[in-house]
Length: 369
Ligand code: NAP
Ligand code: ZN
Image 1 (cartoon, rainbow, N blue to C red):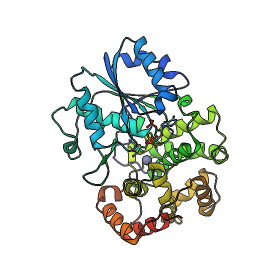
Image 2: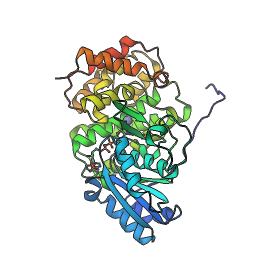
Image 3: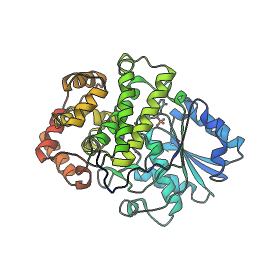
Image 4: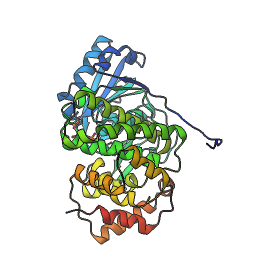
């Protein structure tokens, strides 16, 4: 093992896990203030019990609150601005984000603008080190890991793409209660799990991977190996849902150290322009991405940890796991390739030389009727 002079690990989020954890540990919320803005999507948190638990806990702790429940999938600059404008005269001291990655990312971005009222969302994309109100995250999908990452991915219609806000918005608290995912439909379960899987892979096969991020990613692969049959059979019990939520958070801890890589970079164009959900966009790009690694030793170890004999077996599993259709014209592939090549920072995360042809091939292999 080679020990280099480097930053090895940072994870400031306190993680609380288990059934009923929001209510049982509600006293932890109290220390972040007396008034919260709850940020959530339109419907799901009202149906899966998460919002009810939050409201019960806030009443119990005598914390006042406002609710913003208008976060759409892939939240936009405009939604962030709306939430801040509607609540700017309230004495909000913390943000509680409840839902999938979209609600969590929106909550993290909103927290930045409450702390920096004179900064516009557009300006924030190019500024560094903006502070934020404390953010508490309660995920209801097992995919993004946003409850433990510094990232907040926002749709910017002016640049016709999704962008990381670019601030270090680590949540102060993450509550993982798998009961909220019990009725997550299987199509959403699969696409969000694929996102968690892709975080593990892209963190593991990454120039910025460290021994610590590798340990975490390898544990994630082992847990997914245990779950892969149940996932394919659509037969998940509460204990499996609990494991999946844990995998998703592990994967979030891992990408918090390394960032993601090619599928995420290219996938944003597929989500913005072709309306594929985040997880499906990643899935579409995976066959092409994995083909870049051939005999790369860490890649072979990863296949082994996932319990597959070789690339063909892994690809065949993934092909059956996610259903989608995608047509891409040559012109679109040319444009999306140019967009990807502009993000040199992200391209540097890929541990092999990556050419324009590689990126084009990933898009070509993503086509499916
Ligand atoms: P999502 O966009 O948050 O939600 C997708 C759909 O699932 C919504 O319709 C939502 O409904 C519904 N939903 C959420 N929880 C549910 C539940 N328990 N039962 C039934 N339906 C439920 O999906 P996501 O995949 O979790 O998040 C994707 C977003 O996260 C993307 O914008 C992506 O870029 C971002 N992301 C961020 C990070 C990060 O580190 N910050 C990492 C990866 C991805 P409602 O709208 O009614 O709630
Ligand atoms: Zn992702």
